[in-house]
Structures are given as C-alpha cells and as structure tokens.
Image (tube, rainbow, N blue to C red; front, side):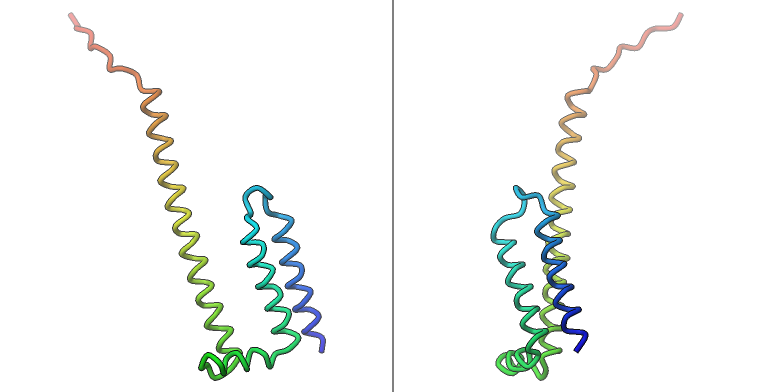
Amino acid sequence: MIIQPLLIAGLLLVFIWFLRNRNQARTRAGKKLAFALLVLAGVIAVLYPDVMNTLAGWVGVGRGADLLFYALTLAFIFVTLNIYLKFQDHDRRLTEIVREVAIKEAEPPRKKQRRR
C-alpha cells in the first residue's frame, strides 16, 4: 500500500513542524504530550485500520470512519471556540492598553481666546 507510508510521513512532518515552530516558553509540556499522543493514535489508525472499527463498536458507532468524523468534528468545534475566546481576550487587552495610553497622553482642554 502506498497510502500508509504517505499518511505516516505526513503525520510525522506535522509533528516535527509543531515541535520546531513553537516558542519553547509558550508551548507547555502538556500540549506537546497531547499532540504526540494524537500523532501516535493517527499512526496506529493508519497501520491498523481495524482498531478504529473496534473502537467504534465499543462506543456504539457503526464504522471507524464515522467515529473519526465525529471526533474530528468535536476537535474542530473545540479549536474554533478556543481561537474565538483567545481573540476576545486579546481584543479586551488591546482595548485596555489603548485606553491607558489615551489617558496618559491626553492634553488638558485649551481655553478659548476671545476675538475682538
């Protein structure tokens, strides 16, 4: 099969990219471990596709492909919500910073000069 090596290579490339393109101080060990487990699960699913069917049977889903689709749908919703909440937090922080700068740089009102 030619698809299995391609899928495994793709998973490993994504994993390497994740580890290399992250600021070490920002990426927590828990995220790295969770991502490593996700990649490992992907490799196992590629090498042993019947495992997905077995897991699907355990949780009451008809096929392994359906189980994968449901899991990816939940992951998509989680990631989308996470990004939305982070954008809201950044927007709130930016608003606070802009307000502070505006207050610090504000000039007192000037008196109007009379015209004669």
